[in-house]
Amino acid sequence: MVAAGLVARKARALGITRKPWVKTSLAPGSKVVTEYYDKANLTDDLDAIGFATVGYGCTTCIGNSGPLPPEIEAAVDEGKLAVASVLSGNRNFEGRVHPKVRANFLASPPLVVAYALAGRVDFDIYNEPLTQTPDGKDVFLKDVWPTHAEVRAVVDACISREQFAEKYADVYTGNETWNKVPVTESELYPWDDQSTYIQNPPFFEDMTDDAPGFGSINGARCLALLGDSVTTDHISPAGPINEKSPAGQFLLSQGVAKSDFNSYGSRRGNDRVMTRGTFANVRVKNALAKGPDGKIPEGGWTRDFTLGQGDPWSAPVSFIFDAAMSYREQGTPLVVLAGKDYGMGSSRDWAAKGTFLLGVRAVIAESFERIHRSNLVFMGVMPLQFRKGESASSLGLDGSETFDIKLPKVFEPRCELTVVATSPGGQKTEFQARCRIDTPIEVEYARNGGILQTVIRKKLNAQLSEARR
Image (cartoon, rainbow, N blue to C red):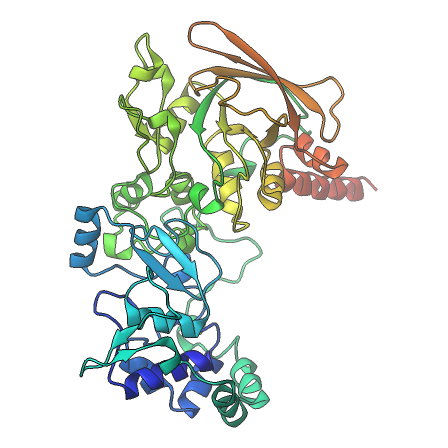
């Protein structure tokens, strides 16, 4: 962070600044950074080249970067440009920083500042000039890059243990605005049905005293046919909410102005928003939504094959949420088909929660990212893995089939299950898939319908046992 400030200082001294088409922001993880920036007089240097502090913690890297200038967005759309961001956060997935930004590169803070000065990423940053001074002199990275001694001098003079102790001493009491939020002291949370931020979650609706156990999945339809490297951001985006999306339309119906939509990440306490946002990433590509030309549109689109008149592919393309609700009304369970590394990236609990609330009973993929696999189990969604060398494509599946998943009489960790996919014409494709419920405790979670139900039943049973004594 000190090095980034020194790059800004050297750039300012040369009379150069960020390019006008580059959106810049500074969001340190701690107010201590501002403390030592101020002490080193680096704040003014960063401000001068466009890196004003916009907040602390999760901002740009989780999609809270705010809008691009309208003329920039228009140019991106009209030119169908693959524009880039350079950030020092820890996530660079598609659409994560901004829906219009396709390529996101992770870099150190001083390199972020350097790329802002250049205004481009398609060049050799070590050997080509970043930019030019007002009088036309080339400026290279080495001209603005601080030495280790320069960084060390600022660190030694401006950063101390006392700064951290002071800033964190009142971390729970120092925010007057937060402290003034009215609260109700109660053992039970006072749910507000009108709230668009926090709702009573539906995970325990229709929950019985006894564990439901295991049952075969019959007549399931495919909600999404996805490729490789589907991230949890694709499944459950954290960034801005499009007003034309199901989540945006829901918020508008609740009287929320577009300017107050905030982000999916900020509304994770409301299942009504988050379920509508599942698979709503602007970059997700679902093969079930392909057009007559074979092209797959980006965004949260699919087909409800039950609406096809004779030919399932004649069914209109609709939002994934709308199709899922249509299937729910018909009592039709759902599956998702995917490729390799399904669920990679952030742990994002809502990627599993939203999948469950859409009515998906199983995800059949070539491989799973470990955390998302376990989260699916925790939410009562069955992760199934194709045999090595097999995939939806190799088995000739296009997603229009109905799926029957047959469970064995004795359900054990990592057991093999039989899946029968029946095409609209009646052709059956039978294949084996490994159930990625990997451990005995996960089997117990699955038997109860998920980890939440397991915990609640154990607690209730313990209370009943105590009462009987």
